Image (cartoon, rainbow, N blue to C red; front, side, top):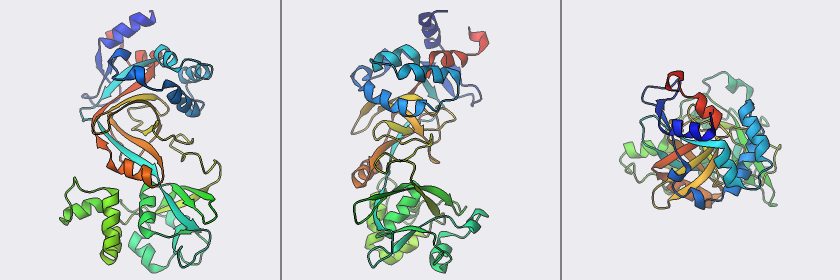
Length: 344
């Protein structure tokens, strides 16, 4: 069967995705149906794709990666070797953003740098362990050499734990990169939802920056609010990559701002190109690469866009909560294999 014949056959079908609920479907699209496809920087997307495609284990993806490394026309490469597949599960599309925090800190404590960033103690592996409140008030981690560094802002440290990774900039300008090292096994509770429950804000007003500002305006009540979340995250120092590169995603490679998305791998293969059509105030039509995951990223049309490192990236990520559509680019043979035999 020719590729043209295959594309026509696929485009005519909307079929259940194997192993998913009956209301989950796939529909193959033509590149002419991707809004803004011709205007994107496909070369930038190809560079990001190459960063993780070397880690594919299956022959079809490995073959495509080998070809990708030799391409001089990125748009032609994607159009020739991939089929756009719209995967839906009955839930509306939702795009949010994430970023890598950068905190100010030091290797030793001082009057300014008073808040420790901890490695995971051995006893915390027997879970569930102590709550955030117990850890912070009991002194159970004190004087044990578990500190990676000390930072100057407990509120930013709290949000660093939510993000799970970040950077600490030292007084001499050098940077420590830290990644997720484990947690205490306690259930995560949203402090934003708690503010809404108390009637302080409506759900549409709450953002990370709003929460930070409220905690700083109300230091005593703010500290108690943060302890409403019993989950506590520990870190590890990462020395395997340049601190100036992006943080490591779920594929074990650095992610790229504006080109990496976190997805639900139950629907979208990690490493796959994904065409993003984000609506909202700052619309975005862009080819991105699925290189990360997240505990809140669930569903076929759910993605988190990586915005980069630092406060500016954090503000942009925090504002994002938009509808749209995401279309996964799959190897043609793989898309073909998803069809049930009785449809051919």
